[in-house]
Amino acid sequence: MSFEATLKAEDDIGKRRNYRQKVIAVLVILLLNTLAFYGFQRIERVHLYDKIVSEHASVQDSSKLQTTILQEQNDLSNQLNDTFDQIRELRRELQKAREQLAIAEDKHLTLLNDILANTKAVIEAQTDAERGSAAEALNQAIEGDPYHRWMLDRRGSLPKELREYVEPRELPFGFNPALRNDKITASVGHVCAANLEDIRTFMDYEVGKVCPDDDNLAQKLLLEGCEPLPRRRCLARGPDNPTEPLPYPDSLWTQPSDGNIHWTAYDCKSFECLNTRAQRKVFADCLDCFDLSGRELHRWVGSPSTPPAVDFTVEQVVALKGGGLRIGLDIGGGTGSFAVRMREHNVTIITSTLNLNGPFNNFIAQRGVIPFFMSIGQRFPFWDNTLDIVHSMHVLSNWIPFDAMEFIFYDIDRVLRPGGLLWLDHFFCVQSELDTIYSPLIRSFGYKELRWDVGRKLDRGEDKMEVYLSALLEKPLASRNN
Image (cartoon, rainbow, N blue to C red; front, side, top):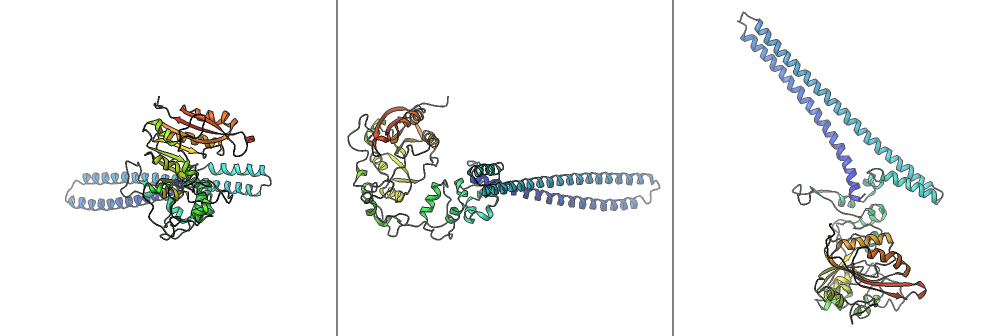
């Protein structure tokens, strides 16, 4: 259950209770009004009786007068009986509402007791097997009802700012037919509520002031599944000495100024430090990718490759589609060099990347291409059949669990338009994995194989039997609706 849905479940319970209370109040008001109405009717009947008597005082035949009075009394008696029947029905409805409320409260209490008992069992378990069994029972107790543990006590455990953020808001002009809703609800990753200590810290700030210096905490939450992160009402920290970026095309291959980067989250505090990490044998993701005069300058350029070479050039890939490549996504695109090369061929690429001990997102933006701060675990934020090309170098490889990889490939297929290209660039795995697992998965989509080249991966030794797969795969230009 999503974070918004579980919060909405509790809000719905509260709304039902408020509804019952309102019904009871309405019933009481209706009863009082009814009694008052018939009281006034009785007074009117008395006045009518006096009038009739005065009008017929001189009339000798009193039988007609008596008949009229008896008829009026019978009518009034019938009306009172009907009123009492309505009151009895209202009392039955009121009792029914009370019983339903009691059942809901008992259910709520039973769930809480089950959760507490199973939580105690998890804590007191002596072995891994006992802990696993107790944890499974706890999960079943929680998932068996619309309530979640963190939702039940959210008013005391979740940060106030987070509650403010996820609160559904009424649209100013009421129901919107385009949205089919009268409210707007914020999105937040469901795992955010499971990391209460970190999310409390992340949402602990002074509204309207500068945000805490917590870039690493934000990325930690994101990598743990708290994605998207909740919005905050504080001002993002910026670089200490910002300057205007270089204009295009100079910005594409010129190192940005150190002053345009907020460095506190990283071990290095300058680009000079980043560019010498390889010499210092520092372990880091993408050791030399900030050095725009090094290997980055030579990626995806040069003479067109031929099979079985696994290095394709941007120029030869763009030529394959004859101008049909316009927009696309680079998954895990490092410092944005692929997007830069594609821009040189008038193709706009969005680069998804993280800030793994380096200012990847800011660096990409300073070069004049578009960064997207997101993990590989997030659904691609594009509509179906919209992108001309999806590219990934190294990121899509056997370090990702196969089940997760399968979801990723289906999401790639979703966002690629018919006739679009999937460029697998140096996908690495063990040869046996490629033969038995990955090739069947990739080929199951029925793409046309414009290139499928496999080469040895030797950087960790020949005994590892690792290989690279580079492939250009074209999504069928046909309807799947039949």
